[in-house]
Image (cartoon, rainbow, N blue to C red):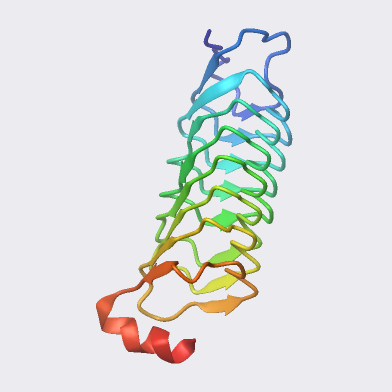
Length: 196
């Protein structure tokens, strides 16, 4: 079941009431913004395809227990708690992100991988903590600060950091296992070792 929206509206305010099928694929086009909590606690959404979305406001998709995949390729701004408590979500890719709110990807039981691939993102702040299944994180070369993030992620084993300048770390990665591996650019290896 797909839902179509009026092409002249630029902001989604609320997901259509009465969606009761087990699987809902929501194609959102050509909206620019998703307003506060428009998809909050929508238990039936499994797959979300977003095109031309630039801004996703607070608590959208929060508590969407069956959400398995979401395309965020064009999102520039994601507010706080947008994808927290999404128990079926397994991976995220953020190639265009510039700003991410706090607690945005926290408390997800199945989230295994996050790719912060955007070269416009400079700060990761209070993101992706308390993810019991998180195994891999990829951080772009533009990130210069990582604060209060990736804590209580006991399975986090592979961290790929593309930044040649060592990012400032503050209260992050507190529960890394002794087997965790951090991959950094070869030319910057000794700078990372000195920063430990």
